[in-house]
Length: 396
Image (cartoon, rainbow, N blue to C red):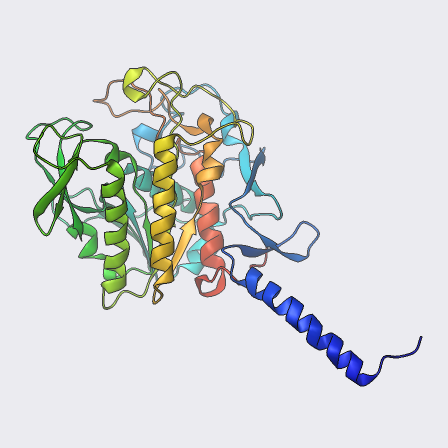
């Protein structure tokens, strides 16, 4: 074979660089991770697109071994008869996602702090994490810095690691203006331009902040800007501008992200945990709906409701807006697709507070242990990436 002239070689190399470099730039800027592939080679992989596969060794903890499980999610304690829903793990399409390693997680977060900001599903997520960590370290005593608040802190002294839960189901400042005690139908005034003071006054020193919210926005709301009413949703007044729940939802996330970006000393990573779907069948929660399934459904056989689809869209739009402004790191735990096919993972009628009506099924929260534990597989995977950068290589 006759060798090409040197000038030809240079032209070929130049052409290859023109073709390849944009491709490399494209892949390096996607919200995916490089994982060790099945054949041992590094490859691009979207860990949030995959399927549930059998995992006979699961779960990693039990309701007996973890004292942090609320009765509301303690499905086995209240007589759930099946256990097969516990024996699945999430498998991305193009790679392997490592099973949660409590020792590794605690070493990665040594000397750091993590806050969960949101509603009871956010707390559900946090309790899943603490149960997983209990396989390596005892759950410490809880304490609170805020009087008469549902917000709590835990400190793992051996690792100097703090976990906090900030109760803020609307993310922004609220006032109960209904004068009643109903949980689901009371009228709440949302100050959509003001963050909830419980988390906003304490969040500045945290290294990781995990934000989520959804279900509370389905109820009656009034909306205030600069302390003036600008509209309402499902409110009894005929003299107030009617707005959709999506207005308040979007403004709440925008205010939350803007607040984090404005805090002078906040240097942490903000995670948005994407929408957690509900799975009521044969009716809504107040219409006799339930979630009796005992195994995952086939991929593609379940869809978000129209309301959930819009909420999910708003989340991603506000996330992209915040991420695009630069300055802080924003990352998306996009667990929605994974959870959409797990209608079997909810408490249904097998979890409750002692004072609750046991005829109402819970198809919103998740059993512990259960599919929600996969959220912490994602979380560990994202934290383990050097500097929290989606574009880095993670060794399996």
